[in-house]
Length: 218
Image (tube, rainbow, N blue to C red):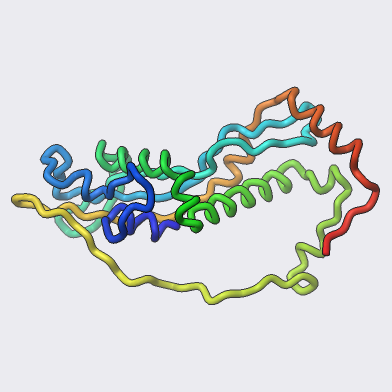
């Protein structure tokens, strides 16, 4: 997902949705965005509202878009070394905001973005189950699922690198290039933020009332 985002931002691929021009298209011909020693960097991270829970902490609701794009400018010194500036240029931040705004549409056209959000949802829920001891409260033994030998998961060859791509805009006496980023999962931070809601208690009671004494999966 991060790789696909970079290709969209660097104008290697046409945007699959309307209203999301590439970053290089946005700044082309703009002298205000010209900072020859700055490299904009983007990454994808979690984006949730505080979780909702009932008074007993037995019902939880995941809220929010799930994913957002962040931006920061890297500064390139005379020795060629890059350091983080701690801030984003207006143009780079605008592109990150557009990426976030269009994320739902992108997920429909580019499934990998939806898959990333699913992974983030699962990671936050897993952290919540552990942090609140929800399995223990429900007397649920997850031993089989957590045993790698009893329930092995599929293994795939993970690529260690991708082909290097360079895209830039040339000004009168400067070049503007884009820099790499990544994916950040702040799952424990998201699982630690919650708000009480009376709306969840009736839902939990309704589910408990219709619950069978046994359950299984095939």
